[in-house]
Image 1 (cartoon, chains in turn yellow, brown):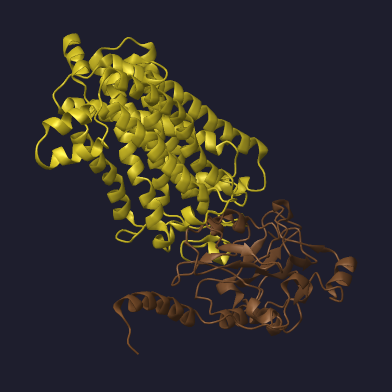
Image 2 (image 1 turned 90 degrees about the vertical axis):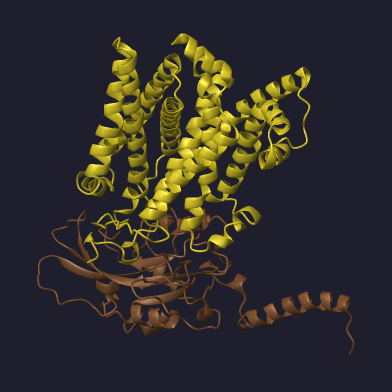
Length: 392
Length: 243
């Protein structure tokens, strides 16, 4: 009956959370990860990643603007969603989303980008013509003082905001993990490790995405990729990936060893319906393969061109792996009955509000946002590019 | 009566608000009902259940439950040789039309009616982002359909699978313990329809309710006690294989 195997409680047969809810943690993860990469340069003074600093911030903003859309689109009554701001339920993890999101968007990301670009915005507002001039004028927010002292204050405030931004990024994505990890009714989700796993996997996906965007956009613009920069990013990606994989394996081993009442059911699921997305795509293709590639780049002296290709493959596979992880958490967690006696199947629709086309559109949308942001606020600093060309 | 434009501008919004409250109607009257004097639950006497499905049908009629979803349903367990881990369970169409005749004699068969457990510490109300689902002062877990976002977080949080998203209203829906009936001194539709008295509405705050004597003298259990939800649907003679 309806793709059901064994016994499901009758209300459990249809899945409540679709591919859109898979996208949501994937997108917020990219935001958090991209911001952490930006903070490496700003707070931890890792100069090598400087060429990606602004691009990472813009990437975080582009994906953050997209992040609430899958959630709102999924709601039965999207127009009631502002109630989460006006009458939040204090015991609900989900109710905090609105506040965490607004805090991160307005108090951290937008402010930091504005402070970092203020000098250029003022300059552009004077040099541009037509509608762009008006746009930049509005973006100055009436603050046109670009004296040495004023810029020094911008720098100082920007540093403090980044410092606040790091725990905020952790909060943004850690809380997404908590939404799942705190559901005691669902043993696939219920784990105190869930927020930590989400944070580290977010860092992996965000860093990989910015690395790929930097490499792709630099190539497209006809400039030389700063190999020192991508080498450093790949090194961080490798170490964070190891922590992420270790945490996930710890969770897995713990489940296997404890083998509680849900184990038989979950074990069956992992060996049947989730075998391809979990074992093959998430673990083998999306985790072990990029880890081996990154490991080789760390221990073997490889030519620059080979390293770059390996980074591109490892980064792309890491993104596939993290998306598969989100899929396995969200969809996998709804495929078994809470009676542990049966399984259902997920049938993705194509042209519906929560279908495949909507998901594809919401995946492309942040790239359009990013394109607009990059056009409006070019992240390339001439100094960096001259250095890169000089190094060529 | 001459009304100036200014007076019209003041009166029109006031009239709109008044009309909205007229449309909203007034809550049903239950003049003698005091919420603070009740604490509702239910007793399910498993040996008495014959799996006729009357309760499921009565619930669906009384509460206009959409096809394919259930505020209450009945499961039939088949446990062989003390195999507590993997009992054979069926609930065709929620047991609404009863169950097929048993073919195999080995092992034991019994019916388990299910419904919202109206938990005192309910995980579903805990997770609702706007407080659209709540526990009433008399112990009934309810959903405000005019406030629910339809996010389905409560559906995920219920350990018993008792909630669903209403396919037309797009909000969470569940058993209300026939609140519209019990506040008028009636029993629930499912209890009324049960031919054997396997379902009994109980008021734990009423000292005269026979439930107190029953709980003292019978082996009674709630579903999934390890979830610590404060479930108030009590099962008499519950087999260990039931989940």
